[in-house]
Length: 297
Image (cartoon, rainbow, N blue to C red):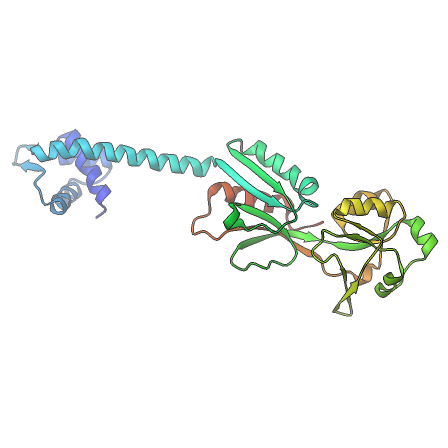
């Protein structure tokens, strides 16, 4: 028998004055009430009630125990209610890391919607392309693109990131259109120096992966800056489609060598392993998953 169950019955008997009334209050039988009190007396090794055929009276020890245990049960119930309320209405601070190329344009609109829906959650978002250490640096969640190296972290896939080579129609008219990825070695390469492999562009041909060493004249540590250079007709660049999408729609640039693209990179939300994931983290992970729905960016 659960100790709290015994204590609750004890309080009910003290307040109702009989096993029958106490049992009715707690939705059980008088026999069960008697068993619970006997169990409690056995555990405490004391007599709590003097029983006669006509009366049930508490001992001095019972009166003292009642004052203390009633307060403890009330505090326990308050704590239980508080935790359940947090589960229903998550609150607290969430510290998030996201890539500077992806976060401001793709993640921010989602977070703004989330912040409106969960006003009790505080968001502290750090946009950086540095792979932060979640545990050591105190991050609750991080958004990662590509292969996940740390197997000790938990992850949920949100979608895929397509990466393609792009160029402007003006550049292609002047310099010619490459028909094979190796021909890019003879073109002006605009390099995102902040990418994971800034000196290599990766391609896939007949199921085999290939790396093309690049050392272009223009090197910038932001894909949006690289995109501007592409739009200006200064060369070709390998960029995420979410960066280039508007320029593609406006026909300022176009995708080339599509048949040699690598498979899309995975988009993940990662978080430290925990037996019981904080509700504030859980609701954001679920929110991101529902929002992106395995989208191809």
